[in-house]
Length: 229
Ligand SMILES: [Zn+2]
Image 1 (tube, rainbow, N blue to C red):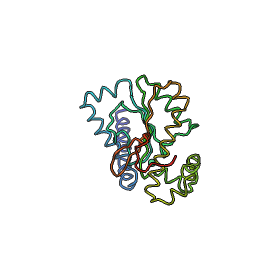
Image 2 (cartoon, protein in one colour; image 1 turned 60 degrees about the vertical axis):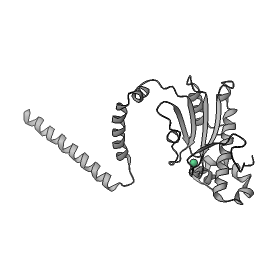
Image 3 (cartoon, rainbow, N blue to C red; image 1 turned 120 degrees about the vertical axis):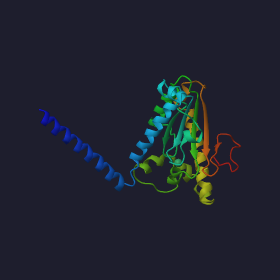
Image 4 (tube, helix red, strand yellow; image 1 turned 90 degrees about the vertical axis):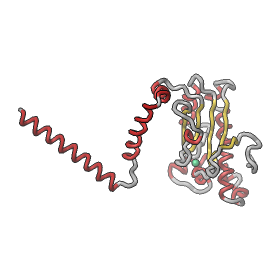
């Protein structure tokens, strides 16, 4: 019996060693897979959070966010990071190009959930300059991305002559502004927002990758070169 347990223990140790060794080999060869590195960073993060009692309390309690933010998936623009939000303050939804269509079920579900939070009365749509989503509507995109962007392509096609005549950087910025404004307008008339009878404030911002600042583009004077709507 003792001998059998010893054999089983040895077999277990060998299997653990093989798994770890294989994992290390995969790490060394799989340069593109950073998942393990992020898990290690998460270990550091988890340990640090325990040092901040206030933060730990927020995480452990029921969430009570005050703001809902719809942003783009661009890896250079992390919404919570750019506005220095901390745990529990903001519920965030990100998609390609921070697009809000009137019939977009995923966004509608997000807004319904966000506005069910007792103290959440503010929604921000946050676009950004040099947006890949806006580049996508300026050219022919195929596959799922093409289908996804098709309903907002008119932002470009209806102003093609003008947008093709200005520097690409300015055209992209203008499309970001127009897209945010349309998204805000679509949110304002959505049943999910209208159910709250004017108690929800909706803002439209564009993040400038160069200055790292947001501009409120729902104010008429917010952009020096105001796009034609
Ligand atoms: Zn983007």
